Length: 64
Image (tube, rainbow, N blue to C red; front, top):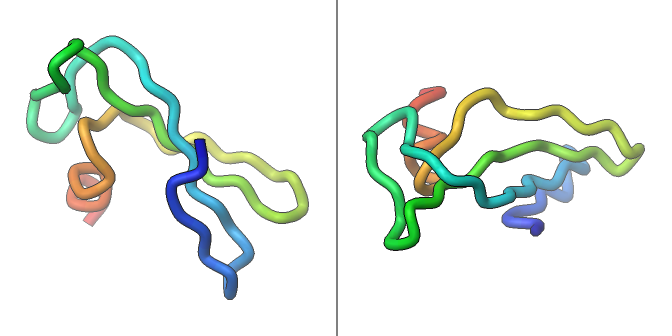
């Protein structure tokens, strides 16, 4: 699922749900799931962002 697109960098942020706890705040959603994020360039290159997070804000705060 595409979360965000940066047209200038030509990169999209994607997420998928998994069972677990947030690496930043330790919480999860009601069903006990969190998100794993990855970036994908227009050229097809994919890079997984290490960690699992309850929200995009927690992921951004974790990586400062």
